[in-house]
Image (cartoon, rainbow, N blue to C red; front, side, top):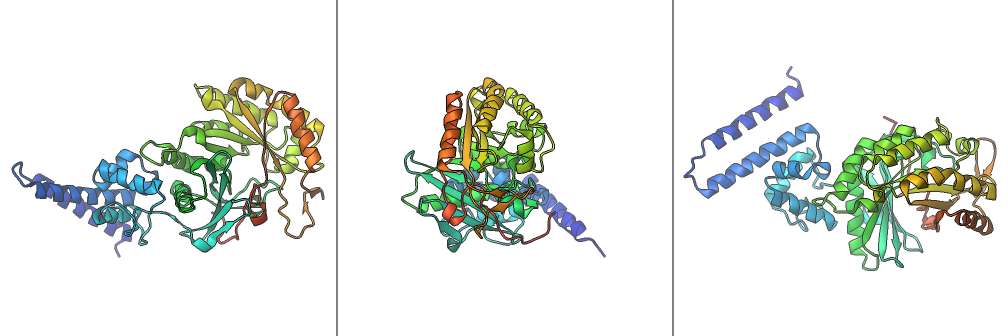
Length: 423
């Protein structure tokens, strides 16, 4: 019995040989129509080769997409559609030709009529009173992920929080996603698809400011899925792609190892470290997957920042989730201010992102940690003392205002039902 892959290879070989025959038989004096047909055949062959290589158009370098689709003009139309939140395979809204759409379907090697690898239905968008919108998206394997749109009417911009994994294996005790465990990593095109859906939602909502910022702070840890994150952020920042500024894309990680920061620093975008506490004992309690001391991780971060030539590109964020009685004391603020000084010397500007804990216990009894400690949100007074102390020590502080907590859209509250086993 002939293996299915052998049959595919034979068919592809015949197709390529036929294509070469057509090209060789075209005479210089031939009509422009013959030349145009030849271009179509060459594009068909290139699209077929792309499908067999496993590359997806959403994360394919622009020159490769141009070659595969039959010209840079067609490739530009595809990305123009995507920037407008339009699926290039939707015949009712797309600006590309039926022939180009056919080639795109070949390239994706899928039977469906969408270039996007996530599906978003209108009834899967929930709106909070503050304007935050949580989008529950379905993947081709029936798993689900969440992305969140956070409008800032004051600054006329909207931020999108995208997921990089289904679940997460970092196990942060204050995070709903961490309680899911890791199901699998997302592909780069699944990350880009979230952004395209978000662009459509924002353009449809006339009251929502333009989408300007992308933060990789949804479900999962960008540092645990670096290669696919790299593909996605390149597509987001490419001048022929979605055209987001490098500084408007933020890649966040708990920091699985000191090397994680260097891997992410090689990608476009700003870095963010979910530190939560510089005190090793406390950080180990909050992030039980931690295998390195905070000083070891800090040294890895500094080395990663130094690899970036421009000081402007070293601007970064350090996040600290404040939990009442755990890490919200004045002594914790002092320890944090002292800890970040070597980073500030290298980075120039470090924003301390202070996040009051969002209760993820729906029963209202608090989240019981490893040592039987009940996690609670810090008081307003405690948060003020903490942030004032940091400012007094010369730190640049951003206090995260809870957004979307009424719809479980806030930081640390994203989680979906497990649909499949871990890979």
